[in-house]
Image 1 (tube, rainbow, N blue to C red):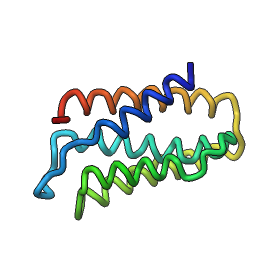
Image 2 (image 1 turned 135 degrees about the vertical axis):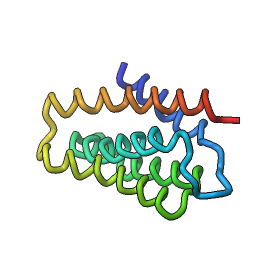
Image 3 (image 1 turned 60 degrees about the vertical axis):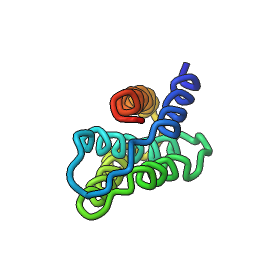
Length: 125
């Protein structure tokens, strides 16, 4: 089940980037993008902690999100800060992989999948 959710999240994240914006004004989906960035940061830390051997996979997903959205200025800073908040928040809490860490991974994969699907359905061309 976890592999299926993971695959859905990955496909949605890669297949559904939001449209590029010509200006750097706040977009109606910025809150969702920031939450998705935070989830990616969390997964980057927790999946590595739990020995999934994915390397920089989740950081690369974050880079792909930034590349697809091409934010600048404050929008870019907020996205990156959200990723770092997700990573640092769990780094301070978990020093080893625990059952609770695995539950968190599963929940964040599910939430990230939902956000990706919603963004794609609402804003993709």
